[in-house]
Image (cartoon, rainbow, N blue to C red; front, side, top):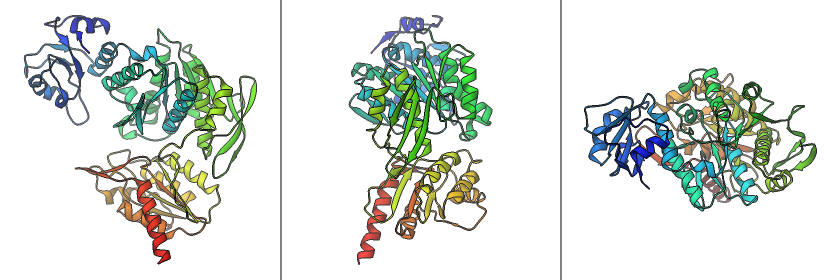
Length: 496
């Protein structure tokens, strides 16, 4: 793929005020190590490095022009100086790849918890409806028949537009994507017009980045503010009306002239769940929507998954799927990796793995498991390093509220001292029903050893992740695999 620089700038609505406008752009790149001949390089300022320091390297590798917020004497290439290189990168990426989202039914879901499950469910529903739906999110990127490991929840704008273009070329008709607050602030989804935007909930997380809940909310709201500015699609907002921030967002969005569709269990919701029931294999509820009532049986446990199911049904319906068909399809929904995933072991106790890494998510998962009435509920969890420290003691309080025994352990310590992280978490405990086992594999082994007939073990925090991240390396680590081995070792030990 290539495009004359002048044509690219024009397509993105930028002036042609650049030397050598007749240059041909062969690719777009924001990582100087990956520059190829003919690339347009974006010098972005990050949290740890300034792309402006790498323009010479980009030039040596074959870049033909630079987009930056300031010119530099480090290389002789033409500079396109703009006030916000990230926003410009998104505009140029959309133009370079032919605005692929225009050819896809596009759903974006944001919120603190529930994004991954909701996106997985929407993909499942639209695939069932013969839409061939792509997926972009925390666990993986699904493009046609190809599955790609996801380095981040929402890709950078260049990568995102390329993936969307590949979806179009593979015959996809829709895409379900998770949209993180970081992505919204950093303009990664700029240039995409959404058919449906979904809001799940908002609880404390990422305050290391956003600083306050108000700024965190405003970041999430950017997705919905954008619906009012769209020119090609009349996007709809699907919002959790039972949640305080959801009600604020619904009011804010409706005032901008956007159609708001609410879901929840409260009276007056457009998609309302009543008569909710749970067991160890799934849930059921009556859905009241569009003047009719449907019996819904998703194979998902937990009150929080009722909301995820409602969000997915409302989103799929808003994108043109017949609601009756969506209700039938959701009964066949697949297990979402690392989301209350049952470890496949045949024992008298059960082991679950979940991604819960906020106090609200952990509390929801533990409440769900406690409602299954196990004799004992044993929880293993830690907190990630270089992330929101304020939530650490809150996580301990959530674990203590529902667990009979808690084992604190390492999560992804990154550049922090793992023992310091555990000390921060431990400040949230009031009683003594906990211990610290720094090595995560040993902690899981200890929990399994403690488990007796009917007990439940929850391993929380990492979910689907297949690695553990330290300051200088990532090492393979899969909670499900480690737990299964621990259970097998216990079985052998008992038999011997």
